[in-house]
Amino acid sequence: MTSQAISLSARPDPARLRPAWALALAAVLLLAQASLALARAAPESFADLADKVSPAVVNITTSTTIAGHSGVNPMVPEGSPFEDFFRDFMNPDGQNGQRPPRRSQALGSGFVISPDGFIVTNNHVIEKADEIEIEFFSGQVLDATVVGTDPNTDIALLKVESDDPLPFVPFGDSDAMRVGDWVMAMGNPLGQGFSVSAGIVSARGRALSGTYDDYIQTDAAINRGNSGGPLFNMDGEVVGVNTAILSPNGGSIGIGFAMSSTVVTNVVAQLQEYGETRRGWLGVRIQDVTDEMAEALGLDQARGAMVSDVPEGPARDAGMETGDVILSFDGVDVDDTRGLVRQVGNTQVGKTVPVTVYRGGATRTLDVTLGRRETAEEAVPAVATPGAPQAPAETEMLGMTLSPLTDELRDQLELGKNAEGLVVKDIDEIGEAYEKGLRAGDVITEAGQRKVTSVKDLEDRIDEAREAGRKSLLLLVRRQGDPRFVALSVAED
Image (cartoon, rainbow, N blue to C red; front, side):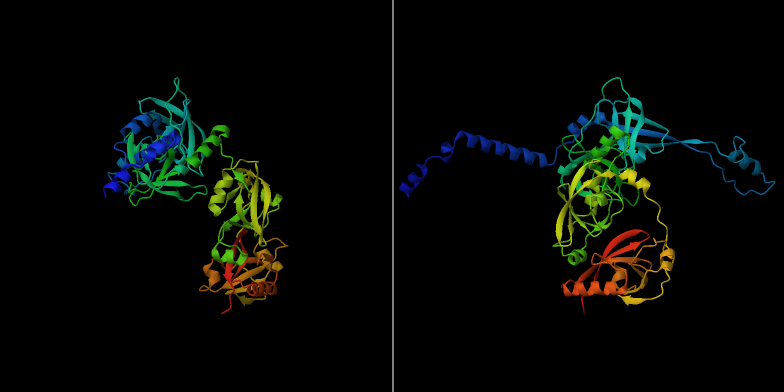
């Protein structure tokens, strides 16, 4: 035992044999781990952070003129002693029931992003405002003008003029935020003045109703009047713009939403440069790929964005076709339609980008020069509502009653004279087709990514799918000019 103890104690210290660079590296790693642990720990106080960023957070008061309107006079019996009273009350200026214009005020929040006075807030805070007044934490009050707005993301950019440089806050990387990270919200809740609340990131990537939505969900208290205010990370960087709450009573219940800085910075940069947004436009109609559609197409998994229509535009010019599945855009994999729409919208107008599509069992890359979405939307014609179809020959198939297009049906559905396909005359309301969204009046134009002009064409496509061992057949369905793909089961019982 004694010799063993001496032997163990006599071994050279491994730390002494390590080179200097290894010791230094170990020390750096220990410091980094300690810093990371400290950063993730619950802060003792938010006071230092609040002191740091408060000078750049502002209260916003807007004034709007509401036009006068005719008042509603109460029914008072003629000769009643109340007749004169109500006449004078309802018409104090003798304007025969026409009330004069009145001023309406609204409150919100915002934050300064540059020393020369650019301020970010929500579009709904300043929408239709005649006057916008900015109150700073110091008590200074300045008038603001609107530089530009983006209703799609509910972001507005304002500008104030100041003799001295203004305190401002930088944007942070919202993509770096993780669920559970601490955040701090500032603003003017319920008109009570500057107020701070803190919480964590409850979820990321939330969508409410907009095409470009990318909200951070937080349990930091957000109430009316907080709209347009900043959501800070612990470094004092803005990672979101407080926009909305989910509440049954109008007050905070711990479910608030802030538009991510990833979206906001791109919008603000365009508003600063152009006074409006200029989003990229691919020129396709798309839908998510379901498991059934992936199986029908031979894809290994449900991913990408299915192209349901390619109108005249950038994608058609590049050779994209209906039925293509967009797998990647500008080198980034496409998971679903929402992600693709956001990525295209954030890409510079006029840029040529590689787009990888899946077609006919193989992939190919197309170079697409993007157009501008705002210009394209202005040029989209209204779609007429079709009348009730009245086709002659009818065949029951896949839970639907189908009829080939005739000139009479084309007129009734307001289709072009060269339109081809099968009209859904009737549909089984407990069948798969109805469950997948097909309705009477829809027109099936493709099956298995090939045109169908007759019932025989559809029968052939069904037989081919079964022979290939596929359980589903992909149909291209058009309704009031809006195309989409639907996968229906063709497996034999």
